[in-house]
Image (cartoon, rainbow, N blue to C red; front, top):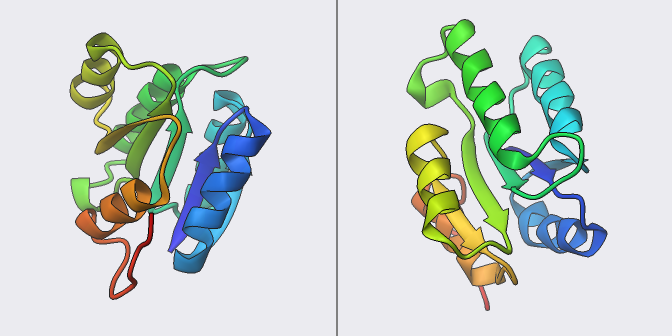
Length: 138
């Protein structure tokens, strides 16, 4: 598996790396612009990300903007739904407006509110079919 963690907060980024590293290869970005560049580069190499963990509030380009752009690129390249990256939005925002926008307008699969717990991440990995036979701990 290949994962992209997009997070401007270093501690949150490192924590997600620890949670995801047993399941695959990790790449990171600290804002939405870097995420787009990494995403397109991976697609161009034929090595797309299976999962993107994307923070919402970031400098240069926020998570909503970056995910909308990723979905546009996927449509432009005619990627079928099974070939598109799964996305878990991570945020300190607990409001329904951001969650609904992420789910319904941008097509994310999960929305996790910080502080993020290991069990929540591994449970979503398993439900998305990205982790098999590994027990998660809180």
